[in-house]
Length: 75
Image (tube, rainbow, N blue to C red):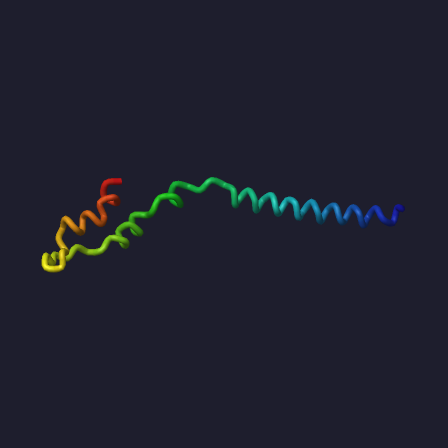
């Protein structure tokens, strides 16, 4: 039986290392996200808003343009 003890000890060491790595990964994955990750950046907002071009014949008026993006400006 003494010959088995080093093998069991090595197996337990490997299992402990694996458990530690799993715990570290779970900690990273479950960590709360920062406010920066939850809120769109100003650059993303600016890039999502198209430039206003006045063209009343195609109903491209400021009122129509503003209505499309009103929730961005008001939030």
